Length: 232
Image (cartoon, rainbow, N blue to C red; front, side, top):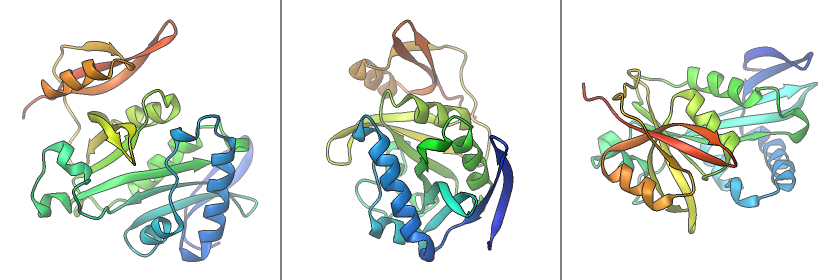
């Protein structure tokens, strides 16, 4: 196996991570189909098309895959997005093309249902983030559906924070996350907790300059904690 960039153990099974290429497309699409079929709520995941995967694999990002016994069991992607009116950099306040070009997206992450619960998504996040050239990029952005608890935890653990909540992907409600690659993010002390289901309330806090920094379960609901970014 070529281009191995990480080795580890998954429930006593050795696994290897390598950078994927166009020759791996069939395996990637097959795994995505397995993951989609296993989802109780299909809206949780925005699958990528064959063309979108090829865009990444042909030099516009990075796609890494985890293998057990030469079988692809998980993959994770970052992409250099096309600059259009939907670019997530606008949610960070950037408008100039040279600034937007320094933003990547943390894209799709898939783990085979049989290998969930072992922290593989978290491991792949660390591996792929270590491969990003910080001399070329300043921020990583991503989107997650409210109440997609596993993916939200994944973003907060990495240090991402919520900068917007809006309807995208043909009307699907999503949080927009951001992570600066240059310096550790600093926040003011004041914290405001609000139900994840209170969309209007969260929108108001974001308009006031707050960002979502963590979440906590309270009884049967989840609350997002908002803080203001410290100005340097």
